Length: 189
Ligand SMILES: [Fe+2]
Ligand SMILES: [Fe+2]
Image 1 (cartoon, rainbow, N blue to C red):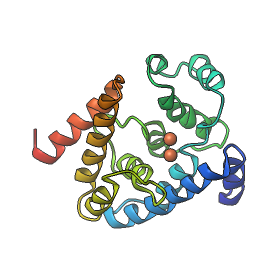
Image 2: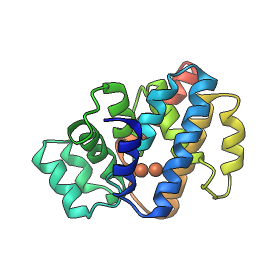
Image 3: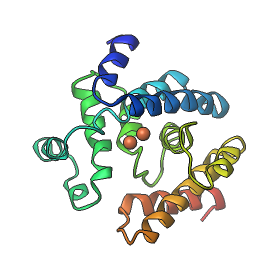
Image 4: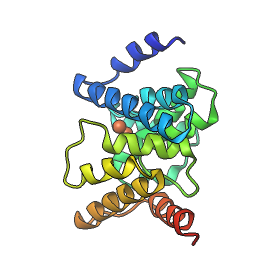
């Protein structure tokens, strides 16, 4: 599928506001890819598709997870997490994406995971700091993203985990694994 048809199809799956967010993620991911030596086209492709299932009814998202044997444990956690594995499934099965690295960047764009690839970090961070994001501390992470990719993702994960704790919510284990993995990577354990 060519880039423009893909964009039109993804746009149709979400409200205008979320498409603006997606455009912000695309632009940010390209900048990060160029800065850190990743393939900008793959970063853009993952970004175009990362939230494709975000606005699907949760029942439909849950069905994709159950019917296709995606990791079922996510169903016990916040529904906000579901659209990431569902999005990877949609990218592969409805958009014909075959690049496993791109599919994983979509799959882990919300949770992160231990041993994130450079592409996964880029898409995760682009989603967190794209120009439409406006929360306290985002500018500090944007500044960090210009200096060190791993430190910036770690700071973002810290922010996410602190937010969840403040809200009294449970933390998805992959997010803890992602943070532990980054600390090991940065500080050598
Ligand atoms: Fe998302
Ligand atoms: Fe997003």
